[in-house]
Image 1: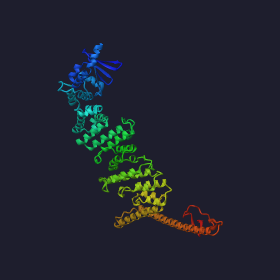
Image 2: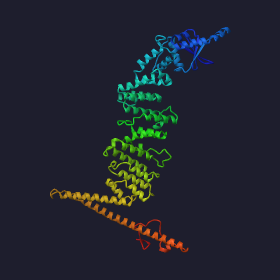
Image 3: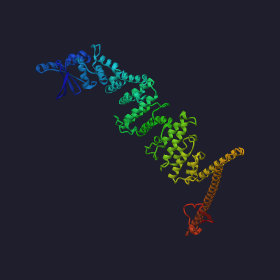
Image 4: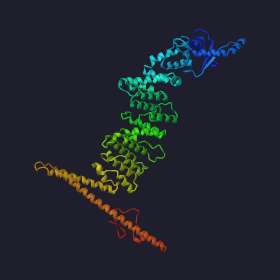
Length: 574
């Protein structure tokens, strides 16, 4: 019914129905040439504007008539809902032309009708009633259409809110999801038949602006939808709009600045249910949020919420999840060890692991042993930091200490220059009685372990063999001659192994004795040299050397007890 033309003042729209055009209405860069009586018959506001403008332009109109120029009434509508496209649909309604409505256009037309006061009291079968009927019967009963209508509310937020369209759409979405038991709407697929359809719906929902999406989440909570649905919806929205959470380059976001992403992430995390024992959102997703929170430097409160949630289900984490790099320049280590310790503390504070026999406790024990093995080779990892993480779990967390022993062995190999006292402290976290046979065998031959630790391992091995021999003997003595069935091959092997271990123990004791003796002798020699030096310095200067005094040259390292011994102050080879 209309045609557009380009003019010097911008685009112009003319009615082609044959009716006269006696006024102009400007909307953005489009000027509409219209019949004022048709507009005034449907819109109270246009009737008022046209009347007022005509009265104020009375003098201008007379001047144009005196000059022989034509006069045209001109009105400009600022910030019209939906812009020129929606106003053109309003014009068609005023001209009695049928328009095709959709979810999005119905919302904008409803707002435009509100703006122009196109009520039933003013004119029958008016635009407000028409759009409300369409929204009620064709939009709000369909979830996908309702989401489209809700998205259309975004450019006219205040007006849509004031007339209640936004709330109606949100209530409809949440009501349909709860009453139809279709939480797949929020990314929670229930069965294969609805999975594809639900994926489309949930993706549409994630396209909403966050202020409106937040309103949806609030309505979900008020309606009593499960924490699982609320949590999953929030995490999916965060993944959609914060690219750091996922490594996929397909993550699209209209939120460009780091500050906006930080604000969004903090708000999303604040809405997460903290105590959700039945949470089925993957721990990896929560770790993704935590990594992003650290990188974006969110508030400490925000990160604590995530750490508590992750810690309460730490047994579901993987080794890769826990190996979070140290993003702060204050941390010298490659990975954030303080974070791991905080997660362990939150895990132990959880009621679910208050019993020391909890299966999840042993799972976490294996997980932390894996972390220790990964961080052990870090050259910047101080002994006290390694020790602190190793003892952060109770003894009941480890059925066997082989994993812990492996981590200690890697640390000692990567840090050969640490003090003997530090070696002994690190090894003290192990319970040698909880080493398997393979672990004991390796430890007994491990030159990196402190000597006392090796002696302890050999002693425990011998003790275990003696216990085994005693048990076999008692079993043999309790049977009659006809019933005794002793495997003499096994017995002979046990006896030989016991003898070898006894010899190893004796040799180790001898070596330890010689080392201690050499240490005491060297200490006396050094004290004597210091005393001699002090005496000479106080007397007179003369040429003096240790080699002239004692007839030998001392090296900086201590002689090995198997290669040399101290005799009358001289170092002689065996």
